[in-house]
Length: 376
Ligand code: SAM
Image (tube, rainbow, N blue to C red; front, side, top):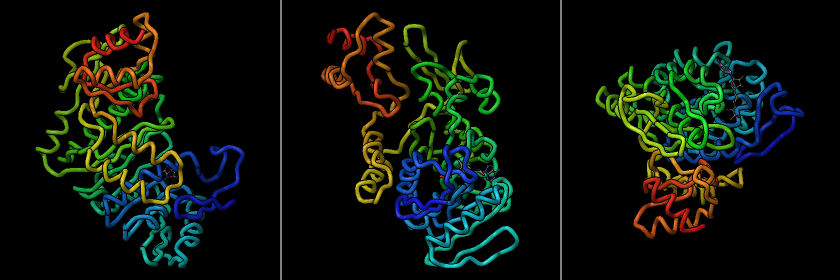
């Protein structure tokens, strides 16, 4: 093992040539994901949090050390991971754990930490409406954990999901997307945003059957994964409202896109169903940025990234200026110049975290093309 530091935590991680060869998984690139999560948890202030797929325990340990959460549960199905979690909790909390049953150890320090060895689905099924914050950070898709997670989190709690199966959600494996998400993905310049919206749309559909609505606190794409923080709302009407924000996307050969809310696609070649509602709660992200300015972050890109998220115009879909220029026989131009022209015409336009080549705007495609032409 080697000891690494991340945020306020010290973590033993297995030595390995490549991260996927290690007996217990630790990816330093995901420090940004964990930074954003720590900031989010700091703002949400849950009483009880579950890191359902913990690996080394780093995520849950950071929640315990860096947020006000009083009780944090760490779980993994792998015995090796569980053993490492025990060592890492001891290392960070400075107290010894006491066995509570065969596969569970509780640490009572300033915070209560419970380390558990089990299938996450079984643990969540056994802890009905127990957690205020529940984190799913799996290899690949979170869908196999969604049902139990939605029953284990409180009805006004927050569910955080990571999905690393971007190839599936972005249309490289269409059938896998149909199987796992029951949605038609799209390839090309809109694939990342559409993939994120398919993921959220799926959670909305799963939640609706429990009469739960969903508010998106923040959802983003980064480093080949998707991440969403979803605040649940209790009630059939809330569920209906969230479902009504699902719909479909169409894109033609010229790059022009259209989207429409609705339960069934109103015409052929539709992509979805996908979430067409907001990807952030403005006040939440504002507070996230404030917290990021004060917090000892592990990743040097976390602050600029959350600032970018905060400034981004929250409208469905984007214009990839390179793709648009190519399709129309034009040269791509600087985003800042495009934004200035569109703003000069009274439209809103910003950069987007989805792509360094794209803008988000409320201007129609003709105006975006006009701006490109002016700059040729
Ligand atoms: N959250 C960790 C972090 O931030 O470093 C990374 C988690 S890793 C991507 C996924 C973990 O889920 C692995 O350690 C794996 O052993 C565990 N896992 C896979 N299937 C599981 C299941 N059904 N129940 C519990 N843990 C599971």
